[in-house]
Every structure is written in structure tokens, then in C-alpha cells.
Length: 172
Image (cartoon, rainbow, N blue to C red; front, side, top):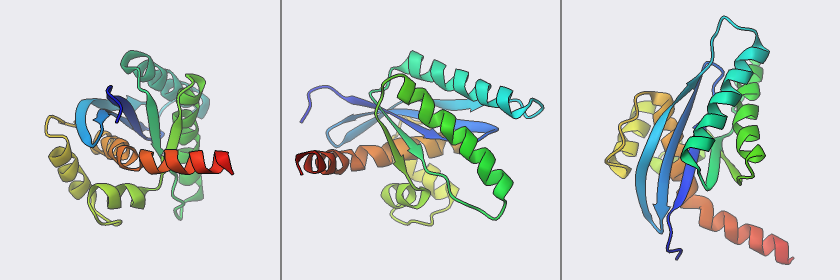
């Protein structure tokens, strides 16, 4: 087991509000560090909104210096336009840490919910409640920040298996 905690940044992408949450993982012990939102102005053109997300996430990465990043995967819904816009926001969530040289993992919403709550189709309130149980000092100010913390928690639980799989594939 590592003697230093790993700082994990979870990102819940959204074009209007992107949630972020930072935790420390020291073995199986998790602790809350910070959480918040990066917001874009809905009155601006898409390119300027994406720049706001880029700049805001760049500041989060600079200020909090995570070691690893986890991002929620996009789910496809009936509104193709909304899915495409979410994909643009998700691109910023993937690009910013990649530009900072950080490893980025991706998790589906159901995998995050199953890891944190135990049920893949849990409600947002259940996710927030479990985040508060697992991180007693956490006080996320929005559902997006709570979701981002849940994404970070999911990564903390799955990162060992991901490392082992990568090592096995590298040796093959």
C-alpha cells in the first residue's frame, strides 16, 4: 500500500453546470477535500461556453493538484441535440486533465451508482446520501458536485483493478 494518499478528482460533465469533487484515497480510507461547480453562461455561443468550462476546469486542476481524474461517460438519450452538447462538455472534462498530463478514467452512470449505492439505477438523492455517509465531512452544495464526488469514489474503488488489467495487457 502506498504511504501517500492519492488525490482523485471526479468530474460530472454538463454544458450549463459541470460538477467536480476531490477526494483523497489512502488504501481503502477515503476523505473529502473539496467540491464545487464550473458554470457556463447559457446566453453565450457554444464555443465561448466551452471555453468557460475549459478555463474553470483548468483552474480546478491547477488549484487542487489531483493525481488522477475520473469522468462520467455520456449516456445517449432521446434528445440528440442535448446528447451532442453534453458530449462537448465531456470533451472539456477529458481534455483539461489530459493536457495537464493526468491519467483519466471513465465510468458509466450505472457503474458509479452501483459502486456507491449498491444499485445501478439509484436516485440522485440516494447517491447524495451515500456520498455523505462515505465522506462524512463532505457538504456538496449541488447534486452535480455530489455526483462528481460519487465518480471519484467509484474510481477509488476500481483503480486497483484498472491498474492490474493495464499491467496484464502490457505484459501480453
